[in-house]
Length: 113
Image 1 (spheres, one colour):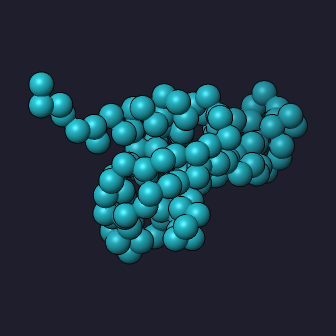
Image 2: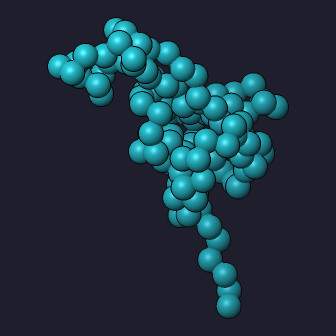
């Protein structure tokens, strides 16, 4: 994300966020990689994207392998941009369960009991 957008995309009043991944590849498709190829940089790559369908806003995205690590990083980035709790909809990628819990854990309101 450009530096100006990174600084300005804070305290967003979103109510509902849709998250998804867009597939692409770099250099060659995953199935064509050879043993000496750098698998971190070549092959399948995914753009993790968060979209507010009401405001038509993309508050965050991340490009990388379709891994739990990138899902957590994507959700963590999203969580610091929002001013309140939101409803998150996804395509049920398993990594999102942990990612959302981990990223929004710090946003939980402490109980008074």
